[in-house]
Length: 110
Length: 110
Image 1: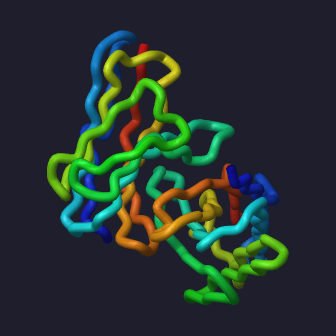
Image 2: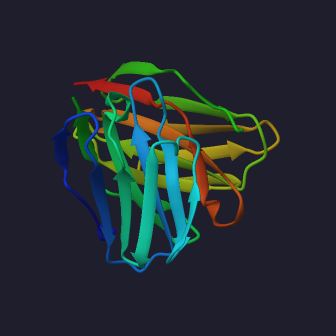
């Protein structure tokens, strides 16, 4: 299995609070991604990174920010969580080929 | 934006049957991915292909670039094949951005 972990795995929070999700890899892969998965939708890209301090927006980036200060860590921040951000969040890594997915984080915003 | 359509959305079959899941996309791609999402939520990459055919065990993936169509076949299906199968297409160098279909839920009955 690709060395990729996500933390926390489950989180319940209240509307308006900040939330940070962490993705950690041990593979030294260049690309890292954050997706959200919702019923009726395919996985949708939130943000991705193509190197340390190099990030770009995906198709559903509003309300989210990211940071990558080290190759191994990619953080996703919800500055002020809303109920529409209740979802399952997946991190993925890639190195020019197939993507490997983390176990997912289930986030509930009340 | 590339649209990815999968069919069928749901498929129930008896153990041992030959299974086919289809994926169509709307614009040119650099590669197509087939992923498997287990009932517990984990996502595993099955295939990445840009032409022709690939085989791994009882799974076979084919792609027709001219027709913008791919199929995933499962021979001698087994209840452990029950999962959601997701098609995704990549555009750009290194496949850094994927567009996903909404998945096909496969249930194999013993």
